[in-house]
Image 1: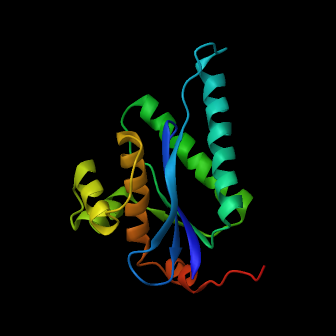
Image 2 (image 1 turned 90 degrees about the vertical axis):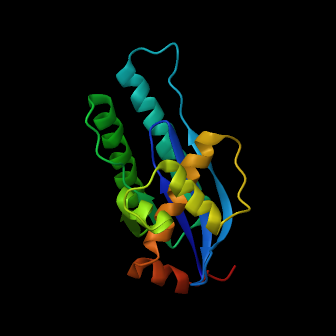
Length: 180
């Protein structure tokens, strides 16, 4: 069995869960939460603040990986945006994921949002609430501090459900922890 960190990366609220995967479903959730970065009120510029927020997010994610030492990282890729601010946020998320992959040297599975929806709901077009309902049907005992955390963590766990079909997931299930 191995640990998997699963993510829903966003500039504002990044959902994560750490699970123990052994090939049995549902996986045991060891930890979950939401990394929130907020704009600074007294900033030099929006661009400077974006860099600050990216550094905070990347550092928190690197710390998460260092703490849990996963065999695999699963992440839902950001979906396509038609606005300039949405495209910028998408680029930030992709950059953070790429950096995390390189600097932690951990195998990654990238999941399309449609794959997450289909895995969690059985349909490629479901609402955010449908995904949450599907995930909470699998892990009914999860508790959240607020709706932002609930949405972000459920998206991360929905990506994990979609990743079950991948070879890297199956390899992570067989990974054994090194002796202490």
